[in-house]
Amino acid sequence: MKHRIAISALASVSPLGSHPETIAAHYAKNQTAIQKIFFGAQEYWSASLPEEEALRLAQLGLTDAKYKTLDPSVLMAIDVSRRAVAQAGWSTGASIGVNLGSSRGATHLLEQYHEEFITTGKTATLTSPTTTLGNISSWVAHDLKSTGPEISHSITCSTALHAVLNAVAWLESGMADRFIAGGSEAPLTPFTLAQMQALKIYSKETEAYPCRALDLNKTRNTMVLGEGAAVVALERNHPNPLAYITGVGYATDDLQHNISISDEAECFQKSMKMAMGSLAHNQIDAVVMHAPGTIKGDLSEYKAIEKVFGHQLPLLTTNKWKIGHTFGSSGLLSIELALLMLQKQAFFGTPFHEQYIVEKPIRNVLVNAVGFGGNAVSILISKS
Image 1 (tube, one colour):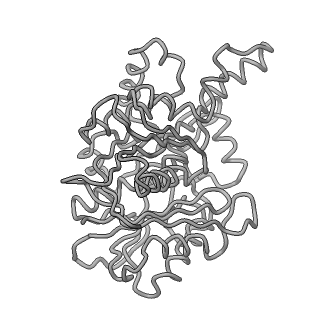
Image 2 (image 1 turned 60 degrees about the vertical axis):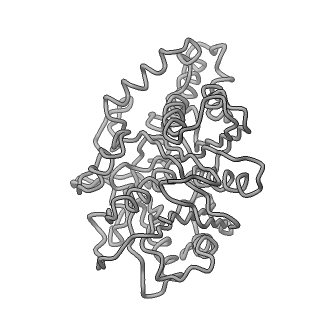
């Protein structure tokens, strides 16, 4: 990278809430936000938004007649983008680039409209415009009255970090001065949950921790879905940023299977090396892993980290045991965890992976994400 890119703000809404101090307090506890909830006739482990956050977003949907027909994924994106822009001190109507993605987009509306069509043979007038891929970024840009570029994409579970990559490229090129980037996902619907079960990766655990992400000794898959949205405000120069993006990396595995990555996650090996650049391995203090809670997914990423770092591994963590896998927004919620560790100078680990913790400053944290087919991204977050 030619320049350090400043993270001037981050806003999120997730099963841990939306206030940074509340979220940090949750991470300091060995408690999960995952619960059993009925969707349709079946009960699933899942991590949903707290009731007060769901009510707040419902109220947002009532503030404008046009917002009443929007999917929860869009409302969450509007909410976090408003808050990020306010935190960054940017004015409404400014030239702000918007790149917000989603793995599945308007999941709730798609299922609702499809059920109506199957039942009645007809569909609502707004079915198409409220379920297109560009729906999220377009509505956010509309809400912010932004005059910058609007970009939408879906690269499954690495979507949010790909959005950050793209925003960094625009800022590095000088074609934009400010960008908000991230993802939004509301996948807790009967059909989406059934799809994850069909892949035989969904948790059937009965213990206290339904998702055992980063438990390298588990004998069955334990992935659980969660919902949430998060964005970062990025700019070339800022007097007092939360942190800096000092490296980006990306790679794609040769496709062996529709959903899997290679045994030693070669895509992650390449993306991590690219993101670190010339930085010495011992200067990486922690890695926030993708670690979805599946046997192969967790283990292959761990092997990739071993390949890159050898026997001197950095501290390893993930948040999916706590908030579930939020698909397209998961990478940004992992960046949130990295930022909290940098700000609090505290390591937030998992209950399953024991490691020797050396008391030293946390200055550089690597964040990983990968999507179906091995689309890996690594982002290096640095304190200064």
